[in-house]
View 1 (cartoon, rainbow, N blue to C red):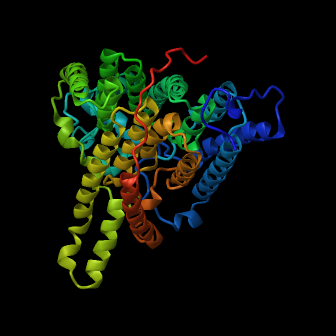
View 2: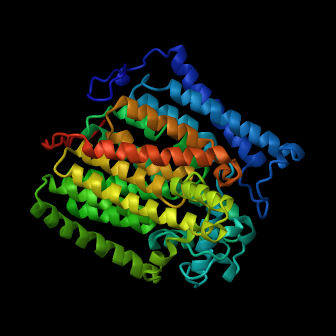
View 3: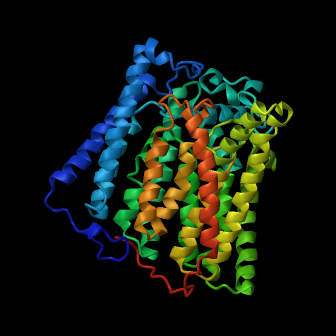
Length: 498
């Protein structure tokens, strides 16, 4: 069994003579990535005008689309198999080279698995034209690329931070009138964020006693990361670069830089706020509330100052607060509270209480948000004064709780907890479960961005949500009743990972 702790981890044994397994993994994954890239030009989120609604009959009538979907599934399957085969067989360098090879085809693919990049471009153009993206949608201009984005976002405000909108406006201005240039520039920003994460992950893993190669296997080489951050071009790459940097600065007691990094992450996407209370614990080092409060106000002062600068530079004020709920209008059973709400609504219809059915999804979403808040507070409370590994793992689980219990869950929402837990979670069974979930989530999105989980008629999905809700409740109760782990904090080493 491959150990995950310690510098002498078998996963770090140098593969000087390539084995059949290492060759199959590296080049099989490359073949899978090439196939996924090819599928993007057949059935991906190409610039073809308003995307057609998901219609299962289309697979039988549109041969190009059917071939693209088949290539997508085949490519993902090969990539997943190669990824699992790569577990524990190479050094950090081997894992980096292999991941880079798998990334290259996705760098030249059409947007795949999502049309969000077109929304970024349209929101950037809207802002560059002098309108407030927190108050109106791209249809208010209208923007020149409006017909390329999902119509859901035509009139919806942007749910992103002021720094990201500044970046989007700059890209839209530089690339006009070419949407292709805009896509390339957004992909380069996502790649830059991913490269920063690649730099930080081994260093965080080293501080937490985790093998860097094992952390990179789960966080970087995972098809969920490559396909959705590189192929899908999501701003989670930039957000997580700030979050991981903030945590590394916190471990190294660089409070000011920690505040700067976390503020920039929040200015990209508000989800990064989850990291702040755990960064305070890393800075405080002790369960003593006096130390915690001291670090909290100092970190808060720095972060608020940096965020205020970004907000003032954008000139958009605090409109992002009210715009955060924009994406929650989407209905998908992949979100546990939403799935339970849909199930309860169906029950209300069946028993004749139609007047109550419309309240079920909003009600359970409120319950889910409350549960996510309680889970985050509980994780924070249990992590007080603990080791950096324990605090970082708690932060990862808090991000997972926010994703699972939030009103909507898309495949790439799993990336923040995935990257954090890869650096800090030492339990092999848990990591195997995380990898399995990451594997499953990769398959829920069609290459053109259609979300299979948005199909409410898929009754097994609703049953899964009900079972998941019960299981999560039981696991949370057992975790809370379990004895608390040791909380002695050792001074971390500050040597860089070569």
